[in-house]
Image (tube, rainbow, N blue to C red):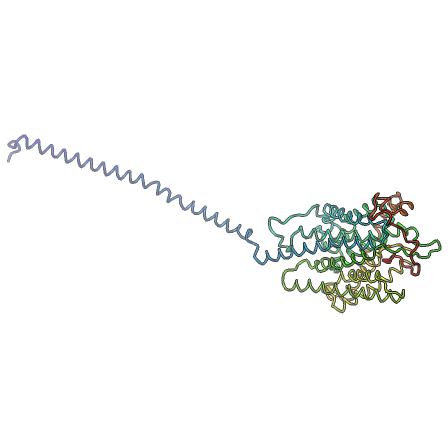
Length: 512
């Protein structure tokens, strides 16, 4: 069939149909292409996100690792460490309060064994040597006494002023709060200072006492304390003084001796021909109560020096220290009473009171390492020494109104020596003889330091006329002459020394 014979409309229809079909196909292809491009565009961000995601994940992982690495610092304190820190800190704080309460005991003892006309003066001195001691120890003394490991085995160092808090993280290196440690240590410093108050009572100017107190608590006591407790030279030698027979009590006792020598005796204490004239205290009840307060306070002094109380072994050691302390105090009282009764034919309560303190001072250096029999020996010998020391000062015409030197000086020396003789904690590699030698030498060094520096200070004050009150002021009483007030109604404040019995001669006795 010839194409020319087909109808024109059929040819036109076929061409039109072809064009429509082609247009539809082209449009369909374009739509599919557009859809493909849109799909690709929508998938592209997801793909980019997928490609960037490993970096984000990696960053998060790194951050988590960093957190995990920091976590041990924040979570380093175990329950056991936290409990140990808490127990040690709280018990040390309680012990610090007990030692601080000893200031009340010293005040009552010294007031009771002196004339009523000097009561205000003695109380004022006890308040101020504590207050001055806290401030000077904060600024100077604490840093001198504990200068740090860089000064181990040396004679001097300084770590700076004030107390570094451990508020951010508990001080796990020591196991107790730095603040509690300062409170405990400053109470010891105040104890060393207040020992002298009784030895110089009744004749030292109040201003001179403030100067002495500042020097002792700010310089003298902390420097010698560093030699033992701050890791200094004597500690390196192996010297042992657990709670301070030498470091605290002998320092105070020898400082008191220096003050008594520089001042001279009270008016009327010795006659022109050298005969001793007793000067009894005005209130033995105060003196006895003061000794009981001191005895209780000593349970902060000695057991508190264990420093670490948590755990069965530490708890046992702390209570054993309290046991030996009690035994020595009782033995000292018994022996002092018996010796004085034998010598003077009458039982003297003041001698027994000083015997208690003598036993406590003697056991302070070695309460952690003597047996119970050893504690009896330490206390008993101390009881003998305190009576002998009072008689010796009387013979030498040295006026020590409360027996500060026999109790704290002589019995402090005995405590240091007794540690070498009876102690069981001999340093490794050292013989018993070597231990005794170290104890004797170290004790002598500390006592010479305290006495030498204080005698120079007191004589310097004396040279400028700043040490002793005038005879008129002494006769009137330091309460009125130094402070312008009486502790008691004026008509009750009488000087009865001239009426005191003269059957005994006891310079430095509690009756003196």
